[in-house]
Image (tube, rainbow over all chains, first blue to last red; front, side, top):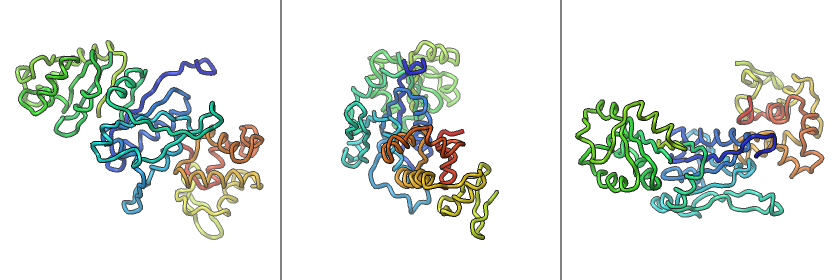
Length: 139
Length: 101
Length: 111
């Protein structure tokens, strides 16, 4: 139970689209940030082309669109620190963890030590994670 | 039980493939809108669907299937048809609905 | 579209008074926007406004008030990182009002 008597539910945001070709990625990020005010148990999953959202070194100067990739670094401030990346999707795209932004959070229960937010997961771990959720939101 | 719903053709996106990779035993999958193309016999996805049916139940929304010029006898064996009410029943029988856009 | 006059230059604002183009912000624009709210900016106000601008520069969002409060506390100390202090500075809401003065969009999720 949450302070104030509200029930905490487990929310998983599933992101499967690349960042600039459609509005899904940005919409998802906005919903995640707005939803953070409700102080629920939030996790994010990045699968298929969704892993491209977390790619390092995005630079949109040439396409006249806002580069929203720095905003993922703020997720830790919003107490969103469970970010799961599908290992298969990453490998199929020739990427590894080193190609992704280094997202971190400060662990309040461990003297504010900075810790990585991203975990690589295999299909079985991801399937199990999805099954634990009360709500799955797809983008 | 989780109900997975897929509304994209498997030839357009890999939504169906990823869905079937991550669906667990005992889950249900419903194909609707362009997702119904994945339910027809003779496509390169037939083997994938047949294999998935060993653990999961697969449904297709018949109005969407018929709208696209196919009949129930074009379905891969084992796929069950539902109408709109059947879709609602599946949703209410599920603990969560996960859509694969 | 409404606008404000900053030293003879017309700067566009939206219907809620937020700057349309972040790049048009100047300290004088902040002074004019705060004067509209009958507020005189002190060093304490500037500390928060500058913090918000740095936050936006780094993360491309205006932080929610909860996040702002925590981050201010971390940077400027607990006597400033609390809602009482921030609401005294910005009575219309530290995130909403201070973001407006800072030339940022309204924080995501604020109504």
